[in-house]
Each structure stands twice: as C-alpha cells, then as structure tokens.
Image (cartoon, rainbow, N blue to C red; front, side, top):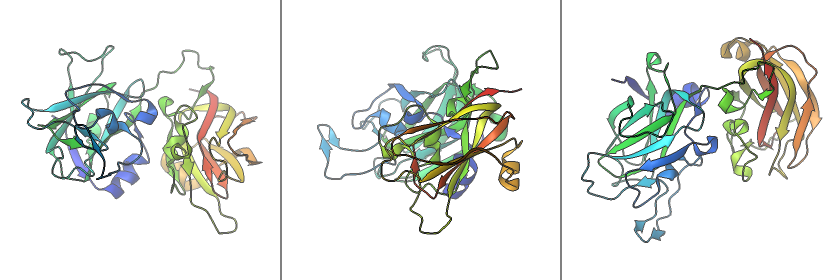
Length: 338
C-alpha cells in the first residue's frame, strides 16, 4: 500500500518542482503507448507541457472540445486507463499532479497511479506497484501528492493512470529523479546538465514567460515558448540567473548556451560559473563560485559554444543573463569523476 500526502501549490513548487523533473512530460520524451478509450479527447494531451486551455465555442464530431483526456460515459469496466512510457531510461518517483482544470461536471471522480519496470511494453501479466492509491478528484482543480520518502527507492519506466469509472483529466505530471545509464568509460564526454543524466534546475531568479526546466531537455525546441524567459528589467545592474545541479560531478570541457528562437529578447550577455558544493543547501548558502565563462556578448537565435580551461571538477553551474531575456538550452559537456 502506498503512502502519500496532499500538499498545496506553494509547497509543491518549493519542494518538488524546483528539485525534480516531470519524467513523463512530452518535452522530455514521455509518450502514451495504450489506453482504454479517448472518445472525446486524446490521452496524449495529458503530457502537454503548456497549461490547459478552453474554448467553449469549439466542438468536434464527437462533442465539446477539451484540452485533456476525456472518455465516453457509462464505462462498463471499473476504470478507464492510460499507460505511459517514461521519458527517461527509468526514474524514481517522488510526487504527482492530477489536474482537472476545465473539467467541471465531467471530471474523473477518482484516480489511481501505478508504475512498473519492464524491458518490453507492459502486458496482462505485468506486475504494477501502486504509486497513488485511489483518491477522489475535485472538479476543475490541480491536486498535488507527495510520496513517503521510504517509497521512492525503486525505479520504473512505465506508468498506468486509472480514472474511476470514466471522465476527463487535463494534465498528469509525475515528478522524480531520472536513473541515468552512463557510458562505461568514465572519461566519455556527456552533457552533465541534461535531465536524462540527472541534471535539474534547483533555483532561479525569475521564470515569468518560460520555465528553467526547458533548458535541460533535448533538441532546440519549436518556438520561444519552450525555453527560459524572464521579465524585462528596468533596474540598472539587474541580472537573472539559474542554478543547475549536474547529474554527476565532472570536469567541464565545453558549455553551449543556445538562444534559438529568441531574436529580439535574447540576453545582452551571458556568464557561467561552477561550484563543487556537496549539497543544494551549501551551494545556495555560500555563493562560492568559480567563473567558467566570463561575461560574453550574446547573439540572437544562436548556439554559443565556449571552451572551458578550468580543470577542477564541479557539481553545480550557475547561468546568468545580463540583464534579462531568454535562453533556449544549456549544455554542459564534461567527463565524470568518481
């Protein structure tokens, strides 16, 4: 039996979203592989990165359009379900969010979440572990659940969301720690900041237009919306920043700061620093940083690559925008140290 606690948004943002990754999100590569039904709205909408929207004037052949997963009425089975492949190799699961925004009167009355590790796609014989016991859902609401610390040791690569007996859910987020598969040769260069290798953005100054977790995913994105963008500053000397915990401590060879799609709102300059702190608390408290990339003029819609001469290992990096703006991706290529 799983043990979870219900938490509010402020606690979730401070203690979950800032420390863990949504390991099933579409932008990380999570995908729906099977479902019981999606008559009114597709199950894949559950994994969309942007918040749900509503257009009451929009209808499809089957009925009102919803930005979420919605099944038909009168399900003869106990529950509708969807199976999702985790976007990383596997992950330890810490918390989840069930969002029924705009589903009011047609929301899922209750849900549960199960997880499994399988070398192949789940079958009828697959053994599932309960992550979230059956719990009631509120209409048009975001609900946040935190697992007990003692239950987060196992890792999984498939998740099954059930709703009892049918209805609609806008978004499903499942936060955890990726379990990376590093190259056997320790001196192989890898992106130590990439979320699949365990990188996570633990704190930032601002993320008004785009969230910092976008910095650490694959590819160069599709538009300005899937990067990190801050508000415009009017204060002399202002700087925006983000601190990233690397997936493994390492010696950095090169750093890439990509401003793809940011053409009139890229930062004037960028700076990157490193720290060998041993904990999040230590790096946030002491501010002991070594400059890896001194203030460098930035350009629009461009991959800036910087060779790094610092030969000491670091476990955290701090990316600073002077004074503000938008960045699409941050790559920190280096070699692990044990």
